[in-house]
Amino acid sequence: MHLSDHDLKQLDEEVVRSLSADKLINLSVKLLADLKESRDRLNQDPDNSSRPPSSRLPWEGGTSEEQSESQDQESEPEEIRKANDEEAEESGDLEQASEEDGLAPEKSALEEKKKGKPGKREGAPGYGRTLELPVTGERIHRPSECVICGESFSEDALFRAYTARYEVEIEKPCSGLAGIAVTQTKHVYGECLCRCGHWTREQPGRSAAEAGWTVELSEWHVAGPMLTALITSLCLRMRLSRARIQEFLHDWLGLYLSVATINQCIHEAGRAVEPVVENEILEAVRQAELVYADETGWKEHGLALWLWVFSCATATLFIVGRRTRKLVQHVLGDVFDGWLMSDGFWAYRDYDWRLRCLAHLIRKARGLEQSLDPQAHQFGTRALRVLETLIEAVYQARAGPPKVALSKQHAIRLGKFWAFCERHWDVEHKKTRELAREFLNDWDAIWAVLDYPWLPLTNNEAERALRHWVISRRISFGTRTAQGSRAFALLASVIETCRKRNVSPWPYIAEVISQRRKGHCAPALPHPAV
Ligand SMILES: [Zn+2]
Image (cartoon, rainbow, N blue to C red; front, side, top):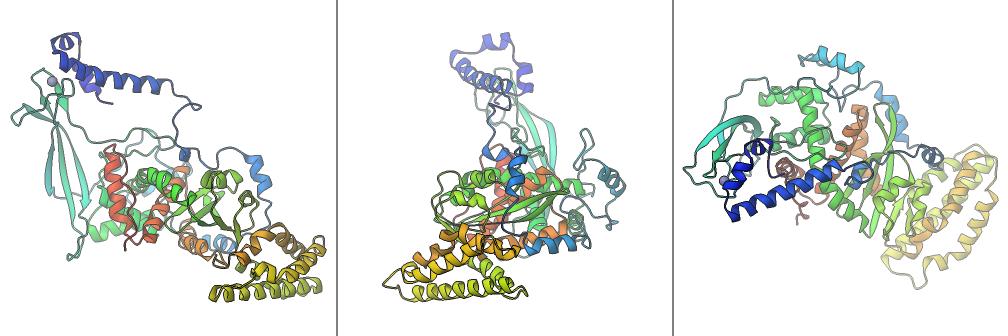
């Protein structure tokens, strides 16, 4: 929007008639753009609004599909079961203060809130900074030109302040200097009087509404971009609960921020980086030559969801959602033609160039080998031997390319093993039957590495990418709201992608917040540091 309510109030027929031809054109262009934007907004409904792909949450709709898809040959990763057991003992919460902390004065309010829906109630007062900090600087924001006629304001144009905001910020760490400096800047916004008689106001930046977000992206927020990035770091990298972040800021920086403000900072940072994830990280994954995919259990306020990871050479994408084909398609699209390393989840089978983690299969085969059931023991022993022989062959092929492709060299062994698996398709022992079927169902993906021995043998890359967040989940019980899950996954994607590129995520995230609060586009992701 070019013209605010403040501008329109001053504008009437008399003003329009007083303008010269070129100033009228200037004004008309702005009016036309505003009119179109207003009309579009008026005509918006869920079927035609310009919701970005990301705003259609992966878990929206499709419950029947999900039920059938949960019948998957992969058993629940061990980590999840362990996590569920441990969760009961752990304290702290990604989304809310833990009860043990007597620090928060609004504890009783929090307890009251716990009974209801998570998040701030509509109309409830917001919390801000309550500690008295000295004002370390002042910035005057004055408009540069008249919004009506476009004339630039000279230095001596009549100026009056009409509002102010306070921003608490930390100085960006710079090389050669240690420590964190906290500043509080008073930002004064004013209006200038034009010769045409119009008062034009300069205003704090604010991003237009975006689908699926209730948190504001705005310069009105008390925490500056770098402080918001620090809070994000304490939450996602240091895995501190909201209450612990509050304690840290209070004890070490002399800052008092409410738990609600801290939560708002994290959600706002997530919203700020969404275009980066949608436009750059998602694209990098779709165009990659090799993607490692994996998923692990995730809880959102008692709802059992999955944390997905899609990792390639230059980027890592996280999504919290259901375990569905729709989600896989949302990420990889229909055009993905790279190699896909994954587990046996059937939705991956839509893709042609697939690899399976052989370490997983070895673990399963070893389990059977150690079984007391004779049939299971026999199947496990044979499967283990075939896997170990062929993996050894792959290692040798990497050292020096074989004259004949490994799949041809080992054709007889593979043929016999196929027949052996077929004979176990319907055996009584459940795990034996399941592993035999897994080999047969995913035969090409399991042995693709024989023809392309330089490709990876395991999905360790994806498992490593998930590990940090699995520990977060154990500490925090997962997330509490859909917005919280979304912010978490978006921030995790940017943080891991920056780390993969060997650059610090925090100055970048601060810059993204700063630009997006002004309503500008997010700056591009940093290139890999050499
Ligand atoms: Zn003017």
